Image (cartoon, rainbow, N blue to C red):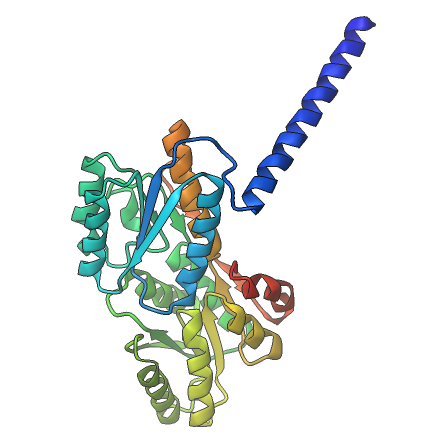
Length: 324
């Protein structure tokens, strides 16, 4: 009986201690303090983002939150030109960072520098683009969505909405993930899908290109953009063209959530960029601390999730704070 009482007492203490420890870790993280006492490692993230891309702002928010929790110094670099992106990665290798996170939108340009990181003993995790090449390049894991599967989800959603002719707008030529999205949509869409290539760094050009296409082909009843910032531009193009085409998009931000809620947009395909940044930092920390590797050689999927008007209100607060 005494043993039972002691056992219950010890169990109670253990439970309380565990809860208290978890509460203390949460409080430290909320206050911007590290929740762990591991060394102050430096992790660098280098992406193919252009300037002003809200998607990558969300990725960074996730990475910075995980870095604060994990006692990591987080640094970030980006360039839409693959060669300059590669040079940024090399600069971080030269600085002897403790871990690297890279996107592989144009894999061939990144292959050699990722190999150099591996040779230097710097673990690499890939995010967002390059799921097919990640393992072959020697990365520990890839975090993102399967772009072909995401595209297929778009084709299926267009079918549900009774669309017959869609325009898939590619804003970065040479980006393998963008091609996979449009090709995936074409695979499952029962109607006709055409590609339109635009210069994504020039929004007036994006708008005029979409507008011209909608004016020339009144049969287009859906426009699919491949990034949240381009959805609003497509809406403006539709208005100027006098078209009734539905505007749909990949990715989510506050403006897209508002557009979904008020019916300006039809649907969005969310790949949870906050999660990509957060998990990339967290998995590098786990590898450095405990040699943990997640995914078993397979990509760790963060999407796709089709978001419609009924979902928008619940997500608006998260988009406003920059986490969705």
